Length: 339
Image (cartoon, rainbow, N blue to C red; front, side, top):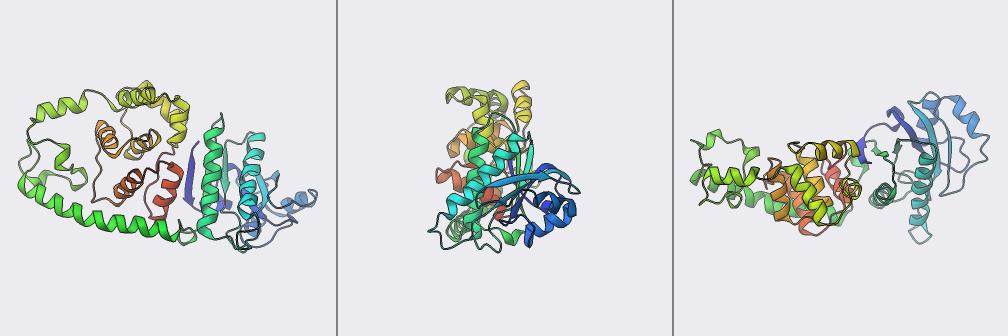
C-alpha cells in the first residue's frame, strides 16, 4: 500500500519495477513501449529476443538496465474492438499478471502506464477504471505492503467519464455558490466566540455555524472537542465496526508505517487528507466525518472544491477510495491517503 496516481514520465520513476505496455513481439514499438526501450538501452531488446514474445493479457519480466528501476514487466494489452470481445477481462489480466510478477520478484514498488489507452484505442475513462479497480482490489487482498503508481503523462490524458465528471461539476457549482452566501452572512452577524473581529479569521479555517452551537460557551465547546483525540476516536471506530487494523489502513490507502505512528501516539495530528481517508475507510456518514475531522482540527467547507468532492461521494454512499482519488486527480485536487 498505497495506490498513487501521478503525472510523470514513467521512464524517470525510481521504483523496483515499471510496466511496459508492449506488443506481442516484445521487440519494441511506439509510445510507452518505445520510450522504455530507448531509456533501457539495447540490452533490453537483446533480453526480450530470448522471451519468445508474449500473448495478450500475459506478462513477462526483464532487467531494467539503464532505467532507474530493477525490472521492466512487459504486458500486452487488448486492442479495443467495441467492448464485446473480452477486452476488459484481458486488460484486467494485464494488471493481475503484472502485479503477480512484481510480488513474485519481491518488488515493493511498481509503476503502471494506463495500458491499451494509446494506439490500441481503449477508451481512456474505461481503461483508467479497469486500472484503478484491479490494482485497488489486489492491494486490499495482499498481506505485504506494495506501493503502486498509475502514471499519466499529462492531465489531459485521463478522464473519469463524462457522466461522473458532469455530476461532480454540477454538485460543486450548486454547493459552492450556496456556501459563499452562508459564510458571508455568518461572518457578518457572528464572529467566533473570543474573536474580536472577523478579520482575525482565516477563510480556510471557517467552520459552519451548525458546527459551533451558539448556546455553548467557548470553554464547553473546546472541552467537547478535545475530550477524545483523533487517534483515540479512530481506534474506537475501528473496534466498533469489528475491523482489523490492516483492513482499515488498506481501505484508507494509508501506509502501514503511518498507521503505526497514529496508533502509538494518542496526540498524533494527521493531515486533512489522512483524516478524511480514514473516514472513508470506516464509511462514516457526513456528520460522523465532520466529527472525526474536528478531532484533527479540520472542517469541511463549501468554499473548497476538494471538500465538496468528498461530500459528493459520501452523500452518494460511494466509499471506494481509489475511485474517489481518480475523481480528485481529474479535478486537479490532492489525493487521499498515500504516504
